Image 1 (cartoon, rainbow, N blue to C red):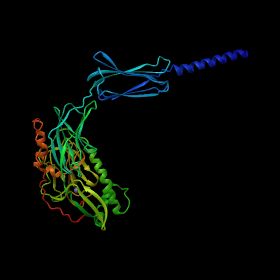
Image 2: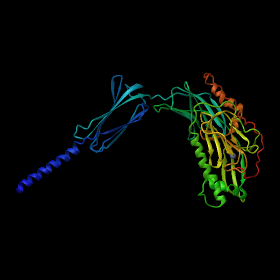
Image 3: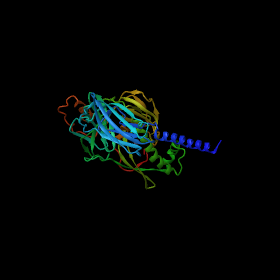
Length: 465
Ligand SMILES: [Zn+2]
């Protein structure tokens, strides 16, 4: 062939390739990607829309609402070529003019800069517009509580609130729906709570409209006992096999091994307990005062500040988050109240342990057992035997470590042994549901209950750290 033919073919080839390239670039067919938040059907104070177009870029975005046959434009804007991402939050509170609460259809349309007619795309979403926060009314104007104790409130909410409870600091203690707008919540009062500690009840509806109502707590100070614990060589030797069975990788002197268990294992156990207590039956399973281990002596009280000494030197500090009760060795351990067994097995420093869910986030825990006689998921009645006392885990002698928790936070069990405390702080507040007009504050009887057993302040041998 002649040179000129080759040249023409070459030019044609370039033109075709250029045309294909231009077609792919300028006539690209990838549609802009639209996302809407919230994903749920209920939308509240705002609507967040994002559009992405990686090829020719976002050209325009339009957001309309169709309600009762009328279309209302909420947003329209054009964008220059390089726009890859557009994020827009449209406020719905206060409601834009012409819009009302209730069912609606949201229409989001976008185009890009493609010569392919802008690759138009429309996303439609059926929604319920709800911008009104729920009304939340805590029954009673004044509430009493003890440092380290349990708090309880009953409250009414004007609509169903999937997220609700009592906020104490950064912890939310979930509330429980008893039907007909009636809710209850137990919460743990921090050991160092004061009149300045804020307590509030909150409720968030499906559209994420949130109401938070502060309530007043009169907090009674408690003097928590201090305890000095001497860690002796014989104690370390006795417990060493147990420590290394917990973790065969533990290395160091017996004291170092003890300290690792006393700190890390304890922390891990408390984390595990929080996990165990995350699920709860949403109704009270218990009734009346909780049982204390019969014929037992209080050996160590709740929230004791324990300082550990080895050869006269301070080596550790821990808080004792339960009560130690000693009776005859291998005494039967009754369930303190009715509920469902949610844990039965070995739990780190606590040894053989049973945890019972009493409903609405309230749990009891029985530790150092020599024998467990129940299984997980078993329903137990107040007084049913759970096992026998013992000294499994980190225990120097046969005793029961008894603890109570609200959603995994430890609370003083003593209050729950006291029928008067339960009447004034729980039963009475439940009755306020029946007479919402005139709720009476609880009586100021927050006195500590029975156990009069002596607790030695002085140095004790390391019996049950
Ligand atoms: Zn204990």
